Length: 463
Image (cartoon, rainbow, N blue to C red; front, side):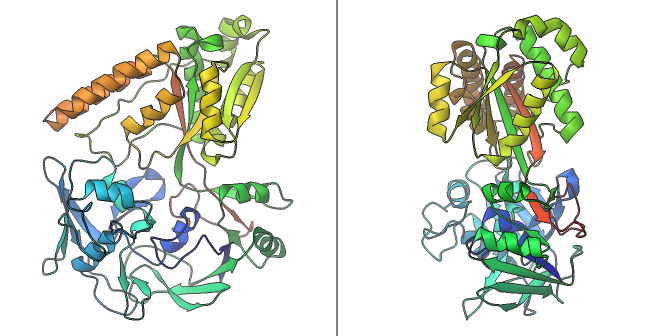
């Protein structure tokens, strides 16, 4: 039996209430309409066998594949509708409550227990329909998230799913899962899993050290503690976050040619070390196409020859939002590159966003390293972060041109013309070489060395 330890407040039988680090566990109990599978990051069928959309990307139709809940009941489209409606109810604690209320037609005015007008089902045809207020780039990504698991609330107030596993017993200290005999999907899982529920981190660490737990799912600050313990090791899994490095157009990075060379060198390093590339999966091409930008090839030797004098006698000052896990990979990659080139760097640690903004406002920095979860943010939000953390005149001017172009593009009727305007605006901004995005799947599961999990995979249990 696979033993996985976690903390009491992180795991909940209801997919809406499960902490983000335990979503791989909740995904065992529930099916979502579609899934993100393997390292290709492409939408694949789960409960929905196929899906279509209208020309304006506002009406989506999902055909459901035959499935049964753990008690044998048939999963109907109306069950899926009610599951999705739970996210928009006033008392919802879902991480997608706010965006769902904005997107789904009628959701903002939906009372507790009501189904918004934008969600409706045809049980005879096993088809679910979602009507949006406006197109949204990451709709499929959201629907594939484990928090969006399709479930059935029983008369006893239990939550039941149609996923590959079901709960066989539950107590205050553990939940045991076993294969769901009614599941007919493609996921291949262990026969049995025991979720150990602990009150404190020390108990989780002891379970790992004693061998009574094979793996642990914990928040980042606890993961870092485990990482420093003797005998612990980890496997990186898919959980797509980005580290974003924003260069100051003043100070040491004031020369455009030098920014371009540093940008190219860091992207080469990140791609080689991490497979790190900015990507926009699940964004329909007609809504937003982000151009692929060919990175110039430059060697460490050439960079040192061109710019060693530029960096001599000064340190690269890096503002780092301490404690934010997703950006640590980008930070490490940048520091390693600078040190390899013989360039000194100074780390300016901050504890919160306010301190980051205060440091940026002073202008006494060369680079800001921040994290960004690209799964659910669109280009507007991404560059909103960029503007706040690169307020110097040159960067603000570049951002303002981008923002004006995006604002104009929103008013265009045809999707392909909106897409072209977005692409052109992004291309112009990237030519300034003011920001570098380094993607990596930072989320880690700490485990026994004999426990083999699929690496580079969104779902750690897709063996």
